[in-house]
Image 1: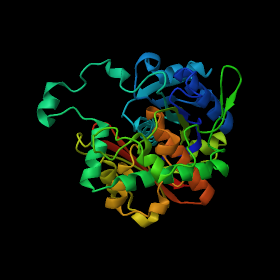
Image 2 (image 1 turned 45 degrees about the vertical axis):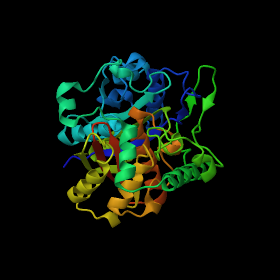
Image 3 (image 1 turned 90 degrees about the vertical axis):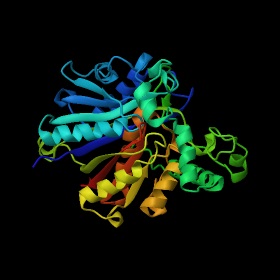
Image 4 (image 1 turned 180 degrees about the vertical axis):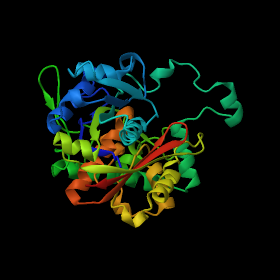
Length: 380
């Protein structure tokens, strides 16, 4: 039987909005990741059948199928195709799912899955151009145009979360990310980005040190007058990219590549699109059921920190060990470059699994429209 294995996983450092990576065109940022992935794995790009690339704001510099543009900008042969995927924040996790399905079905032998978002250069919401993306029928059914920030406050209310809980979660995310950065745990997964002036950027820019409950408590609520969600306990607007080289076990042996992890289970779940952010909970349950694994089999979880309320609600319902959740911090500390985040989380998870000998790891993330992907990886 054909399987889908990951033989290489790299990411850029994540840059703050208008920060160190904001001078790079997103196609060129993607190209650097693709070039670095090929160099690290030793793959001949001519062997690659397709580049499946997540990107959410497909406007301006991120239009015209940035996946194909990135492959050509990387100097890869004209024969390497590319397709751009939008499942909102889960776009590059969905790219992995599509790539895995193509490998198992025999449509691919070697494929790259990943994504990019330059939120400095293509601001969130640019793809709508100010137009209404919902239409009369949707609004007649749900009565409101969904907002992620409002959804995050709805999660707070439904799960009775407090400002202190959300702020403490944010402080812990920064502390874990800082510890990982200081101990060199990100070095193997990060591909340094070279700027136009030759500067090499090799560290995540968003990690903040020395934060306190008092400093976070001083921030005003971002989405409701007496709300809980602030800039401090939400994900950072960021620039970044990540990519994985995927193939089958058989082709890995033929090409002399060493598999790191196998895509064990890949599922989707949908939930209320107005609250929007709760689907990781049913996605997790569905993944466990379909995999035949129990919660105790999973040694590490990556749940995207779109807002602190999302993983806190997930923890409350799923009952996972908090110590296994986002062991090196998450999007609150590192950043959330929308179309690249799924692949960034998976890259971080894969390297953590390999470093710790963790057999099974799970990733899930909330997505626009009230959706979620969930993926279980098995260490090889």
